[in-house]
Image (cartoon, rainbow, N blue to C red; front, side, top):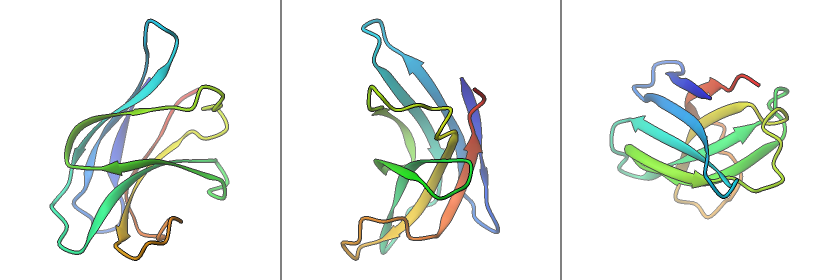
Length: 107
């Protein structure tokens, strides 16, 4: 399942994400991010539920193509929104509230 990551508001970030099932049954999200470099923060990849309340952080994402391992028991129908946020270098692990690109996986 592939999904376009569309820019939010006036952001220049975009890309695509695809869930790939490997031969051993494990799943990864392949992300191709097109985004400007950040001077004082970083991009982070999230899976978010439809109510935009529950969030699963997948890790720091850089412009270009990367893979993120999915937890084996994670139900993607519960967390269908792929979100890229800008996070400040403040040591706070929660979502900054600043999303720059987002797309929704089809179940």
